[in-house]
Length: 324
Image 1 (tube, rainbow, N blue to C red):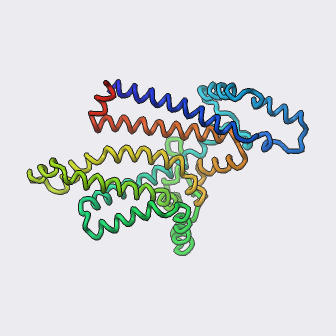
Image 2: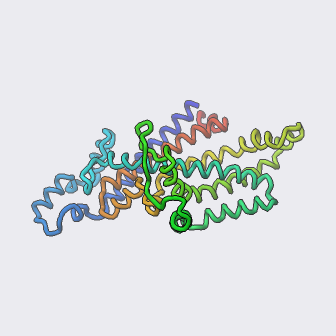
Image 3: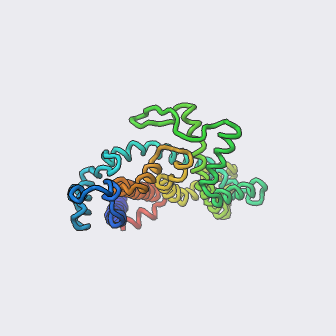
């Protein structure tokens, strides 16, 4: 297990270094933020002073090494627009995005996996066909359209839930959360369901495919021949053996949910990182853009590293291969 851990850790570090180069070059090689930061009518002396102050007169590779040195010290620079430390700006918005993403993945997992198992266990039933139709709907319908439809139905027509915003928050373990109150939970339900819809369809189809495959395996037949109840067969044999691909996909989809919640946050006016990055792209606020992308890459790498460790615990063959 130690060899497997070291192998995955080295791979994660290599990916982080490679992606930091790609992100930095991709963002800093486009446009000129000086044109956004100062009035176009300003004199050349002020322009030259700002260029020198932010180091834009240096070669790109030198700017990158300065950036990496600051990054290793926990300094991601200062926003050109907000004039505040970038790390503080992102961490102020991170709890809202984390809360939304976690709730969306919980909805998708707690609903999608049981529905997928049932659809695979009774593939010819009418309910299973309805479940698979729901999964197709989750894949096919655009997120922004579903969000607008949810607002029109539950906020405008029925008036059951608020149309946007985060609502009141309470501090739990140093993080402001809205799920701690009924009013905050009412603000969270619509955007969380909207964000979960695609993941829900994916997990339904994945769980169904795994269940159909496992139900025809010999060990399931032997379990039934031993007189085990269907609930024990599904819980002990089916769920355990379909958990490996589900854990892998769960990790990947959780990372993508964190990174690409931009549309949902925009539609529901949710004050998360997505709204911040959209505003930063509009005004070419490079430090915020780079910091956001680096943070997203780090979260992806961290989540995949954790998934690999869990994968190794679930499948001993992976640990043996990694140690070798």
